[in-house]
Length: 353
Image (cartoon, rainbow, N blue to C red):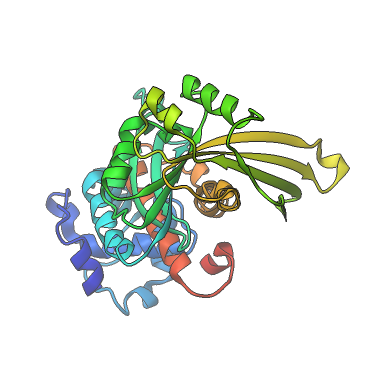
């Protein structure tokens, strides 16, 4: 509790009067413990306190008794999400300085966080995930998915990107974001799609030209996961001088293409599909490494979004009032970090139980 309180010591307690009779840090710790054990609502947290009172009193005072559902709800509704998120990021920033590898950037919409009565749209959360450690390093919440472009620079600014590679979808393929990655000493592997139509057309034409200086993979890669068989092949080119003369893309040294064919393991599961994805690269990696990187930027989908949706039922969470959805989202990310830091190989659902 000493270390936990120190991390969040500069958080301002938004409660007033008699509402402050329960210690803020104890309430945050209770919320984290409840979330670790599968709690998704403030009602779950209040029931968790009742069921686990003897355990909690081993490290909490609870001098004014057990906090109720309304106490937990009021705390998360009033707590400043920017300050709470900054405290969370400050803790993870110290960890990120000691690691290297891939940072995956992606956004996710909390589908039931909208409030029609107050004309409030669903919350969209942009997260930065360390792929190797499966830890959320930073996050920022916006009220619209369209704001993701302006939101991405904020979690990146909190991170030490030297020696790290940022991988992101087409939404983040913007010159300002790429320039920030380069300025912070990082590398990037970015998907190129229709939001950059002219550049996409130039890259696609070049990489499919038989006379272009393109390096092909020696042998396709075959994976058999998630009920399907995926075959991937990649190609790349380091001849990007002509492209830079037209588009002036920050730090660009190579372009690449990955072709995926997915076949279901059972014929009744549907037909085979083929997808082609083009990439912008700040380092001249081989087609084999690009082929490995292609599924890695989807790691945030499988390692974070899937856990939030399936294991933590985030899409069913109906917290809508004030800052509740943003703060509880931060709490869930803290829980996932703690679960992934635990060294056993058990699935996260088993760990929560």
